[in-house]
Image (cartoon, rainbow over all chains, first blue to last red; front, top):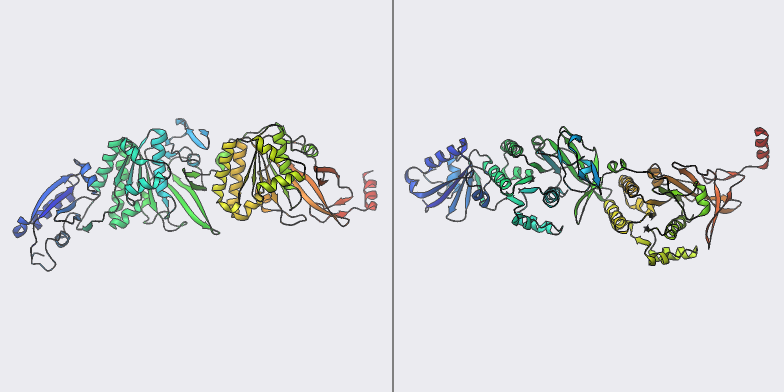
Amino acid sequence: MVKKKSILKLYIAGQTINSIKAIHNLEKIFSGELKEMYELKIINVLENPQLAEDERIMATPTLSRELPLPIKRIIGDLSDKEKVLIGLDIVEVGNKWL
Amino acid sequence: MVIKNNKITEVKNHETLVKKIVVGIEGFDVISEGGLPEGRTTLVSGTSGSGKTLFALEYLWHGIQEHNENGVFVTFEETPNDIVKNVKSLGWYLDDFEKQKKFAFVDASPSPDEKYIAGNYDFGALIARIKYAIEKVNAKRVAVDSISALFSQYGDTGVIRSELFKIGAALKEIGVTTMMTSERIEEYGEIARFGVEEFVSDNVIVIRNVLDEEKRRRTIEILKFRGTQHQKGEYPFTITSDGIKVLPLSGLELIMKSSTKRITTGNKELDHMCGGGFFRDSIILVSGPTGTGKTLITTLFVEAGCKMGEKCLLFAYEESKEQLIRNGLSWGVDLNKWVKKGLLKIVCRYPEAMGPEDHLLFIKKQIGEFEPTRMAIDSLSAMERVLTLRSFREFVISLASYTKLKEIAGLFTSTTKTLLGGESITEAHISTLTDSIIILRYVEMHGEMRRGITMIKMRGSWHEKEIREYVIDAKGMHIMDVFRGVENIMSGAARSVSAYEEEELKKLVK
């Protein structure tokens, strides 16, 4: 079963290999039928360090699901699609997209 | 190097190639010979509860408070709120410093949010936050506590290691002086838990909290300072209500002065025996079995001081103040009079009441407040009873160096274990530190216990070598003639030299 729309934030530290990969992987994961399922905002912590401080972001890239609550965080370049979807609680285990 | 009150206040540039910044922790700047190497990272490693976090916080606090150097604290374990609350008991108001933009936290404590790891990552955000915080308060000092927590939060040793290098490099580039703490499992084993922490810094300090014969003993050791000097070995430290105090031993001995001024012992004959009295800044040890008059000599010593208008401080570890005053009266000495005049202060404490470092600090504090020119401890052996051999030795060394530094005449008593002859651990350990040693002994002669006194050491002066007999009565101590016709008194087994032998000896001399 597909759940309701997620508001996502992706924290990156400039244009590193990991951040480029993360953006790319995220687009891939949310392509097709899942496309309508999210809203994404990308935050560069080098430009907005206070934001990273407030949100206590340590590792980059960090994908944060702001809504629906509770907040969920996924660290890394998002190359593990299954973990991303389960971590974001967007699909349940055994879903056809996995 | 300028040392004032156990703190280095100034280090001249030419004295060291690697410039150091004064930390401000009492005694630490002495053992580190000037503080932490500037612009570098120093790792402080210790077991849980050894005082790492306090050490790191105190480093920052002194920087802001005394050196106008602002600080950033990166916490991986405790939350900023907890830290602010915890150090308030030390009188440090970090929240005020935060408001004044002198101090900033980087809160990297574990967050309660769920966390998944999906792919490669780095600590770019953390580095950005640290840089931002440094910029925000214009920090010169940074503390990171503790990097081991990073390993338990993220688990990927390889990534953490390379990221720690990046953090270290970034901090070096900015030019701040960093202290990183890390956790160890054993007191004597690998430097840090994950075996990688020590490679990310040029300097390593180990702090220990060892259980030694049922007593906790805290020590600090500087393991390496790349390219610069430091004192080697473990130094005891204690955590007081004003923070950490390190007790450097050898550091103090370098600046001892030596006085040629004599002061009276309180007994005319004894003055004569030591060639005109004790030296002004000397350490005197009085050793003897119980009941030979050690407390009497102590009493006479402080009374003599008071009579000259000197301030005297007496630490009693075996008797209460009232007992001491009563004892004094039985020898015709009114100690109470001097207490009332404010010239004498009697401090009674059970040796068991606190640890050795705390005793030492307590004594120093009393000396600092009362500013005596004479002090006595009756008896050091009581202290020996409750300390381990090593702590006792350190205690005596530190105490002796401190009284010398302050140019105080210090008289310590020590109780020998056996009635006749014998020696005590106190004697064995501190005899080399003392300037004068007076030995009191029982002498068994003709079915009677008599008492003998002798000076076995008087540094820098002539002294009498004979063993004299003395009696104690209601007027105090009376030193009489040399024991004639007996030998082996000090060993306790006095033996009469017969008249025949004496005659034979006389013939030989002729």
